[in-house]
Length: 421
Picture 1 (cartoon, rainbow, N blue to C red):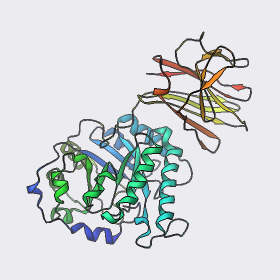
Picture 2 (cartoon, rainbow, N blue to C red; picture 1 turned 45 degrees about the horizontal axis):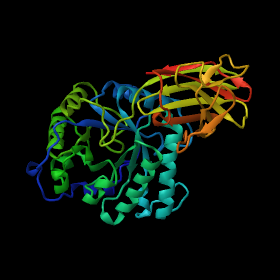
Picture 3 (cartoon, rainbow, N blue to C red; picture 1 turned 180 degrees about the vertical axis):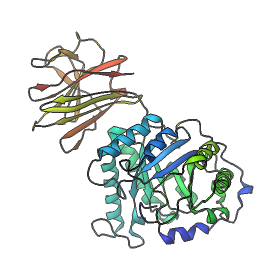
Picture 4 (cartoon, helix red, strand yellow; picture 1 turned 120 degrees about the horizontal axis):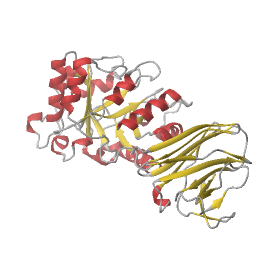
């Protein structure tokens, strides 16, 4: 399901079923979420706004700037991801696995080996989170997947890599055809069908999908569905076939994912899905909380601080070279406790914790006395001169309802940001 090309070979195998009709299912999805391949640039259309406004029926959107995350930060995508996440849509990033080189596909570096494709795939996961993790990215979509048990270990490995490095990440594998049951633990959700409406009406879901207890394990993508009546039938079939995630569109090849349905076609699809809460399979959607931001000035600009139900997140741009990047945190809302920031800070703050580069410290007194918090990394990421940190709430006992942050580099201190829930 690449941004601009749907591989003919992948389409051809969609008609291969397991010989079991949908009516023989022992399980069926009663409510669903729409999961949209959002292969359209937010700067050139209103489709991302339409997505956000269509929550909670729309539960998942797949972002795809350039058959992957690209190499440069895009503020338009950042804003779209944040707006969708705030609305309750889980946004996941597109990663091309290239069938792990088994078909001769080359990586961007011209290599075909399994190891090279693994390295590129894991690198794209890291880039996605480096560029957009701060903005609410919720997981990864692994495209151009394989469906046989001989290769399932490759997908289990990138799934494990993603979840170990990005807590709460939701993962989807897309072989574009019915995967064998061994893939049930290779990702949270599996695309079991990707093809035209004409193919879908004659397709048979495999027995393990029909009998599986959790419909959120399965995702169907149906394009070239010309009329609203066809859309309604496709939605009915997808429920009978136990798909918890579905997307039906009148758009067609070469890229059926570069628009959204509109009008009564779209509203009917949303209604038929019947989803009433945030989407995201077997893991919790990205939590939404309170953020504060300020432009800053001089050496430290574009500062922001957020709290959600799992973490505190901080971001700042350092416009001059500094060796130590500090974020001072008043977590108990009491300026009399913790480290008292010196002049020229505009506030004494009372910092109970300090982030220094990629280490979190706890204040031991009002003076310069700190103890590193063991077993916790602020997960510092750097994009150009912009630094981001994420600190789990579990590392910060006794949080007040609101907290304050001050950013520091050399002798420059920002004003106080107050944030919370």
